[in-house]
Image (cartoon, rainbow, N blue to C red; front, side, top):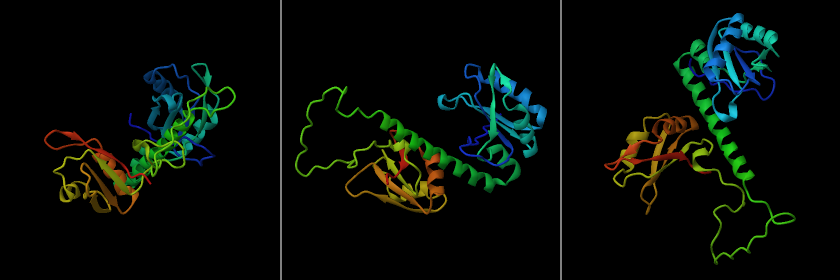
Length: 254
């Protein structure tokens, strides 16, 4: 089946077509799990999508998308706490509409807008998770029980830290979306006109800016996040030039 791409609830989401299922047995293979879920939930209505999560952070979770909210309501009421593979399922409504629901109820423009918002939310979450992970890995402060460290070498006069706050730095790949893209590893022969022809086909394109005295990098600005998100999604990892250089496309660090 296709990807449900709904978001798990954090509060009390309102009724919709998508049921969020958690506390599933993680050791069961995905095909076996989806088959069992389909057999159970198909009793309550027509299922248009069903996705069990594979990645480590989301294991034990699934989304069941019905064609009607009343089917989802009945399923939550009757299946709540039902044991599947000796674990009681915990059910709730998903926090957002699934891709399948938007495709079914809206037009191409609605789905494109929905997908862009979902991608932006996903990248914001990745940025936050990366920041939290980096913070957790910071070494313990000196004190009781902490290993002694050699004294820090004094910085040379006039040198400043690139991270004055001293906090964890989010990797470029996980920066939250904004309207300006940062391009790296560009072939020398690609100028403003060439890059504008490539990136100008995305919504709200404004300009390409090269950096005087620096080769291989550029900035591409759009009127809003939507254009930048589309451009990054489509252009990241492209190869350019005779040597096939892989271009890195990230959001500008704010």
